[in-house]
Length: 180
Image (tube, rainbow, N blue to C red; front, side, top):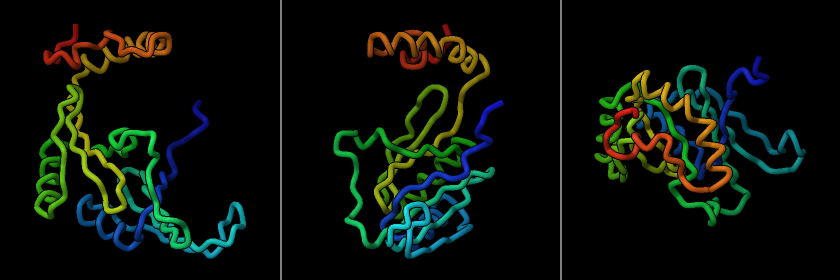
């Protein structure tokens, strides 16, 4: 029995709480479900005003943000490539993903993709605070899922030894998309 039931919420920093709520409502249909504002951090008792907003990401998933007006402007980890840190959100279909892409691009938001990852297709874009988001639509088959499940530990162990990409699931990247 796992200790964790589910993720309660995932929290990021944002530049502007109101702008963030409005953006996520407009482009991703996330409902604004809760706001908490304090002048003192409950866990540390540090005097620091903040606005903590919560958005409904569907199926009991909650995406939250903190606006921290007294802190230096937010940045990124300079040692991590921009494509690495991102939040991937599942959508029901490639069609839905493409509709969101069109809406974003119509408002001048740059979108990369769709990118075909064999087991899903995705698009990438940034929110107003600079967080990289991915919308992903599953395209895998049960055969693909089983093939990947069968080799996951072998792949991880080989990676741990060599730090080179294992070839166990080469079919995902060789253009064939065919489980071997």
